[in-house]
Amino acid sequence: MDGRRYLDAISSLWVTTVGHRVPRLDAALRAQLDRVAHTTMLGHGNRVVIEFAEELARRLPMDDAHVIFASDGAVAVEQALKIAFQFWTNQGVSGRDRYLAFGGAYHGDTVGAISVGDGGFGTDIFDPLRFPVLRAPGFDRPDAIDVAVGLIAEHAHRLAAVIVEPIVQGAAGMHMLDPAAFAALGDACRDHDVLLICDEVAVGFGRTGTLFASEQCGLRPDLIAMGKGITGGYLPVAATAASARVFDAFLGDDLGPRTLYHGHSYGGNALGAAVALEHLRLLDDEAVLDNVATIADRFATALDDTIAPLASVRAIRQHGLMIGIELAPPSDGLRWGRRIAAACVAEGVLIRPLGDVVIIVPMLTTTADEVDRIVAVVAAAIAGLTPSAAGPIAGPGSDPRVGALG
Ligand SMILES: *Cc1c(COP(=O)(O)O)cnc(C)c1O
Image (cartoon, rainbow, N blue to C red; front, side, top):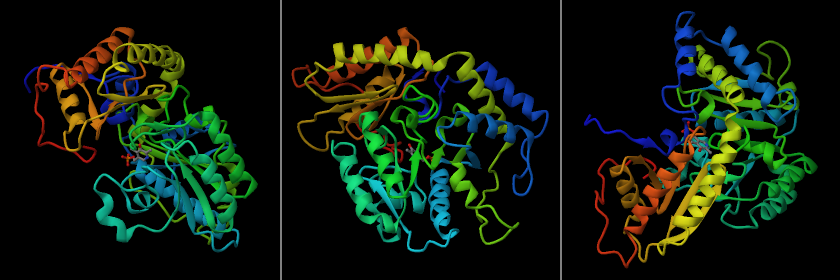
C-alpha cells in the first residue's frame, strides 16, 4: 500500500521455494489455463496431474509410490492416518487403532492432525475432541528416538503407524535431531511391523538440502505427507504418497470393501499440478539444491559470527535453510520474538517469530548478498534488545494483527 519493498525471509510461512513471480512457474500456470483449470480426479484422470504424480513418484524415497492429492498439508496428514488404519483392517487385522507421535509435533489444524500434534497455538480448547495417541518426547530431548523405539516395541500390536517430522520439528520452534538418529526409528517400525508416516509438509521440497528430508535419514517411509513447497508456494496442493505395500492392500473389487472412501473436491487440481510439475523440473534444471548447500553454509558462518555472541541469544538451531534463533528473555511476557520481528520488518526484511524463537526460512534461491542482509538486519534487531543497549528497540511491541502462529 505504501510502496515499501520487503525481502521475504520466511518464504511466505515456508511455502515459497524459488522466489515470488518466477517466470517459468508463471508461464506453466498460464499455459495450463489455456487447457483446463480443474477436472475431478474422482473416477477420472487429468493428463497434467498424472504426469506430475509420475514425476513425483520417481523422486520419492519409497518403493513404487502412488499418490492421492488434496489441498492442504493437514489433509495430507489426515489421509495418511486414515490410510494407515485401513491398511490393517483391509488385511483383517483389528485393534491397530493407535498412533505414536512426538512431543512438540505439529501436523496441521484438522481434528486428526491436532490429535497427533502436541497442542499449543491455542488448540487446547479442542482437547476433548482429540483421540488418544502414544507420545514420545520432542526433539528438544536427545533421547526422543530412543524412547519412541521402546514404545514401538512395547505397543506394536496396538499401533497403526508412527508419525514423525523427519529431522526438523518446525512449528515447535525449529527443534532438530541428527538425521542419523532416525535410522533406529525406521528399523523399529520394520522389525515390529508398524507403518511409518513421514510428515514432509515443512521439510520437503529442498528445505533441508535434499528434496525430501527422509532421504538424509536413510528412511523409506510407508506413507509421506507433502504440502507447503509442493507448488513452489503458488497454489494450494498437498499430497499423500503410499508405498507399493500399502497401495496393494487397497486393491480389490471396484467400490469393494477395500476401497479408500476419501476424497476432496479440488484434489488433483490441474492448475496446481501444472505449476508443481514445472517446479520439480526447475529444481533439477537450475540445480537449486546445490544452492541450498552453499547458502546454508554461508548462513551458518554468518549466524555464528554475528548472532551467536549476542547476550540475548540462548541457542541457534539450523538444518539446511530451516533456522531458529532462540532468544533468552530475562522474564516472561516481554514478547521479544514479536519485537525483533517488527524491527526486522521495519528494515525491510520479512521475519515472523514462533514465541521467542526468531525463525528464518529463506528461499532456496537466496543469494549470498541476501544472506548477509538478512543476518545483519536480524543481528541489529537482537542487539537492540540487549540489556546494555540504550533503550528498547523501536517498532510496535504489540501488533494487533496477530495470526495463528503468533
Ligand atoms: C504447515 C504444516 C502442516 C499443515 O499444513 P497446512 O497446509 O497448513 O494444513 C502439517 N505438518 C507440518 C510439519 C507443517 O509444517
